[in-house]
Image 1: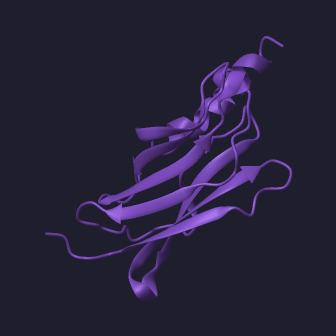
Image 2 (image 1 turned 90 degrees about the vertical axis):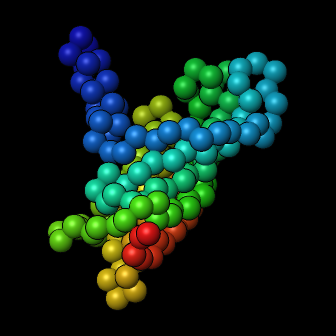
Length: 153
């Protein structure tokens, strides 16, 4: 048991160390909760860790109440994504299709909101997809955003 706790902690923190870190831009309350924080929608921004000049904004629900305040609640699966060119874009020669560029835990252990990237060479665009995972059955809820690769300045 003593060995299991540090291993679980490392497993839960590892994705945060590997992928982009998001900055919280703002939030709005969507439902009042008498005990614990209100339900809300959180807006986060993160830069693509491999492609300078691209910033994505993710809006996702955050469950409040007592369970939400303690980090035990499961957040709803839907999210909105908007990615934009914020500087010169240089696409690396080797870019893996479907590479994960961001994720955030949306339940205590088994559910995440992920953002993956694709390169659409024929249209000169980077395409970002966000979707919710669940260990057992996944989720059909997703959102997509495309960033045309354009000269900057």
